[in-house]
Length: 624
Image 1 (tube, rainbow, N blue to C red):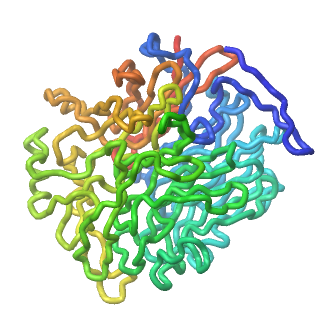
Image 2: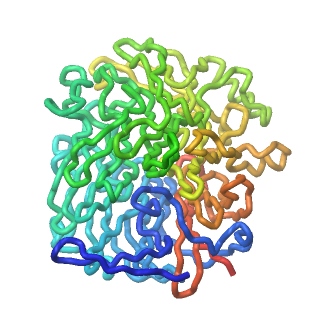
Image 3: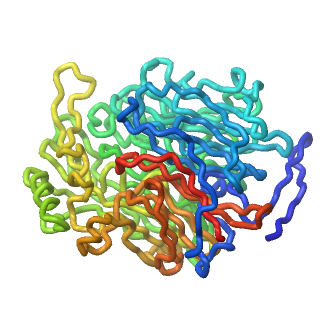
């Protein structure tokens, strides 16, 4: 496979060698700046994918299973390949540079995070790559709330960046809350000479570190702009907050991956719920920019347009996934669009430049809350097309029957609960709601095939089971959610079989031109149920997919420890292999000019919310 190179002038003082390599490398977490998760490589195709075999494995040496460690880990990273080097981040936030053909370690950088400090999980989904044609940098955000600039060739810190190579991201947003969580778990966006980042913040208490999105100079680490995700007085959207409820409001952050339209200079943010994320009597109003897709001018941080997908969120229905920059044929012409998949199972599709919906979005009346003080928003948006890719309700007669034990356990949970459709506020009585807090879909997001304008999204159907309980006088919040059952807040049994009849997980191909499904299949299985003759059930899943010009969709994600390839046109399974543990990550692919081979890569770490098996293996596959 040949590549073509052009030398182009950028500005007056420096030049950038731009290689158009038919997608040979993987320089962005999502494959390209717009997060399509697509590769034009096709050495591996429908005819030979069944011959894939392991090429090499790299083990990070980092496993925290909660037994011999305070916290647990999850290996969710998608590595980059740039200029012939692979860059991998580990659960403990190290960066490792590897030979992409062999896995030989070239260098490693360790930010030495405090592994004993409380966090939901030890996690890093990836880093970002920047070059001006001469200098090469890796930009890494950590759970400790720092941004590092690392020389991509040596692994040494760029001493000109910030304070000897790093910037304290807590400064300016978490000063009032020194003991509250603030960190980065997803790779930042690189726009010209800016590094743009959000952060993970705590969302259980009303006040906390701000979820602001900020841009810093790649050269110096100096702050260039700030976008207030909770608008301040005089800013657009401030009137969606009642009284002073905006002050020091926590949450409303971007913990997932942002996207960049390089040509238009637009950065797209998937924002999350304001805090607290369930009982919101103290933040009456629609609460912009909570749970909104926001397009910003990447050079200035100014809002260009936005759309709020959930008003006054009281279900933890964050926007978890990277907005996918796609093309779609609408009214006879092909337009640039952005597709946002959600925990709720909706796919929102907008004109990328203006924010105009491609398909109509209706404001639908929803129930009021019975919890004192709560003022649920009276309507919620629903796109007319495409149809939901995840379950949004359940009937009593749909209770599981996969085993007698599962049925009995789930009946015990359901007997005192009410089954309610999505967007019913969690009430004083135990309530079963679909989707659950993990979706729908989650941070793995969707992949997009530009050849057929098809979006591929994996999803799960696991309900949440909650009720609101009054807290003692003087508590920060008058009511808190309480989960029900031995597995806390999820509607499943001790084997993690969801309590409704299967399928429990899907892979869905969506025709974006028509707003219709091309195909939909169960994704994943439980071996013990398969042995009992239960048809393939699908499973809970975290992580996303990769689509290639070879006609394939690659995905791990499922909690059954498998990595699969499907025919992108039909959904037929063409290849399957077992991993050391479940691959809760997004796969990537790259071409090596040295070996003349295409490689496919997945991080297999297991653990997370769905597995007791942990591993630390980066698995790399190629044809014999």
